[in-house]
Structures are given as structure tokens and as C-alpha cells.
Length: 127
Image (cartoon, rainbow, N blue to C red; front, side):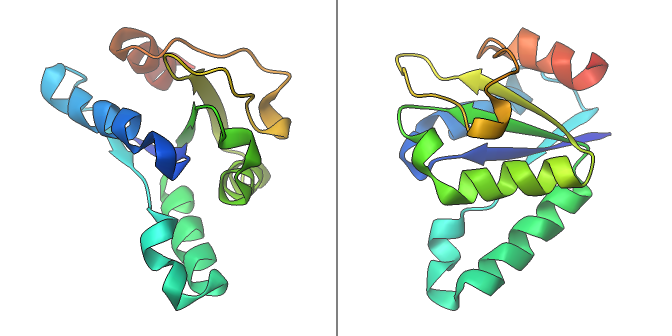
């Protein structure tokens, strides 16, 4: 089963929930999504959040970055992308509908994929 870590800015939680709901719309039983809401753990300290993110990314084969208006300004997204790349994980990004923000610096040389079930499903399975 392909396990995909979702990296996102908390302001875009509604789009993250859309991706979560794709499981019920025929995404397939061979793909599962995981993410971690660092904001809910922030009171426990930075090292605690870092450890949780590392554990989740280590378990994933790929990372999907949801890019909204402010994603490029979020240090945790930068951390997740950098850590995933350092571990040799495939990292892809998608521009969220109605947003114009830039992807994290490490992803700016790679093209975005469409924010739709079929495209993301294909990239996860084949790319």
C-alpha cells in the first residue's frame, strides 16, 4: 500500500479534508494518507512536533504538499519537505484551487500537479 504524508498549512485544512475524503470516492484501497497537525501539538514543544513529523514521514513512501496562499511562509512545511527529501522520499505538490501562493523553495523547480482525485491517484501509483 502506498502511504502518502500530506504537508499543508493549517489555513488550508478544508482542502486537506477533501483529500482525506477521496478515500470514500474511489481512490483505491492501495493508497492511504497520513498527516500530522503540528498546531495541535505545539504546546508540547518543538522537539516533540519534530519527532512526530519525522515518524510520519519515515512511514510514508511519498509526500504530497498542498500549496495555498501562505504555504511558502510556513517553516513546518519547509521542514517536512526538507526532511522528506533528505530521506529520499518523492515529494510532489499541488496548487490549491483559488490560491496563488508559491510552493516551498525546494519545490519551485518542479511542476505542480492538478488538485484532483485522478491526477493525484495516478502520481501516487506511477510517479
